[in-house]
Image (cartoon, rainbow, N blue to C red; front, side, top):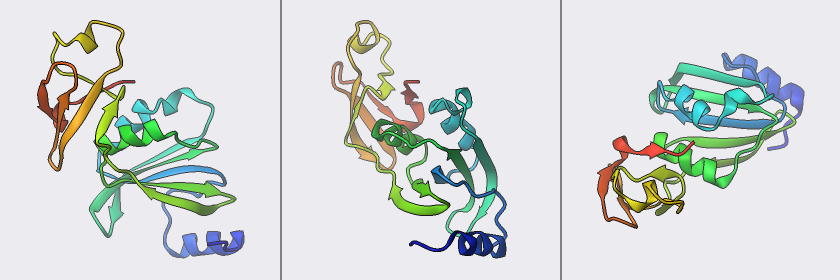
Length: 163
């Protein structure tokens, strides 16, 4: 995994790299097409000093089309992985240091969503009182969750993420 930097840049050029390399930071890959902007907004990437590169509708041998996000000098926290998993359940997170992938992780939908998403029941105590939301994942594909407080069950496509 410790290739020379010049080899990494040369190999990237040979592969027809569309989005430039970053020296240090995070790459979120395999995002469903059209979801890259939503993830960038969710992670508040536009309000930081870091360079953010978003590629949309790029070719993917695995999925046909994909979006990709590259963020220089920023490394994600575990709760951010959980948010990404709800929008892009097959995304991978690559940690880049000195132009080389140091770590590669697949996002995983957690069994419990603690203070990540809101209950869809307007009358739920978690929407009226200062308590952290807690949703249990009943099914990951298709995503179905249930609220810990009120028992309200809803599908993943209706999840409202906390920002």
